[in-house]
Length: 287
Ligand code: ADP
Ligand code: MG
Image (cartoon, rainbow, N blue to C red; front, side, top):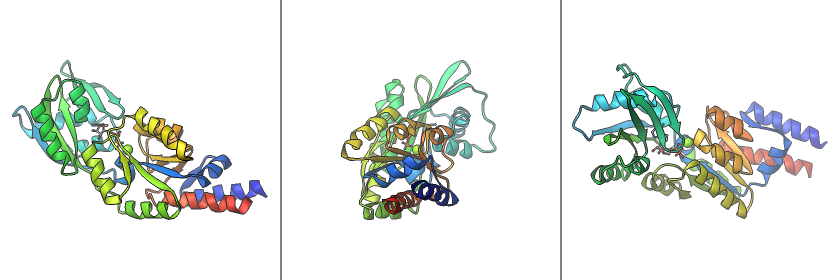
């Protein structure tokens, strides 16, 4: 019977770490035409490492690092965790009122001043990035690195981070194509870094998207047919909600998990095509 086929697919999926919130999700997943994938933490390992610390005011790199780590401590963004890891064993200055600015960065108060760690674009909008510093950031980005800026009213340091693509990223894209599904990368990261991974995977991409712009892109893609969005972060929540099927990956944030229709719990993105195959075979058995 139909309910039995659905129940057994939900159960079989769950045994392999593929969670779907009900039969309607299976039906929607079987019909997916486009899969939009977040970059950081989804197509990449989400384990970036700090590769460069460029102090702009001549102070020692360690000073910039501990301040950046203190601000990032409250964030569970992969970039934040990398900066905190780099400062392991060092004494962090006391900061208050840390708050995330999704898709942009984090701010906190230190010594009566607002200290922010954020994308060069956001630092620029805050009037804190000189054109010389912006040019230095561009150099790091063209090396495939993500750059964040530590700033108060002016930039104190540029921090470069590198995040390797997941080993199974290429295989995932290949399997999606063989299922007749079009992959596209959506990222809040800069154009140059996005271009590097899109070139490697030979996919379309859209970069420098704020959370609402990711959502808007999903809305546009839906004109071509049902869209699956795969993401791991708080910045992906609006897009996950907008998509026909939103899938949270990995440990994810609670926000991503709550908003999503489905989740892949094993940290393996080939589980995305596996989810589509499971849904299609289930619907095939019912019809
Ligand atoms: P993605 O879409 O690739 O997962 P996000 O939307 O999470 O990326 O972030 C986009 C950009 O915003 C990052 O590349 C970074 O420049 C900046 N950013 C976001 N969160 C943080 C943070 N906690 N610390 C510093 N920069 C951040
Ligand atoms: Mg992400």
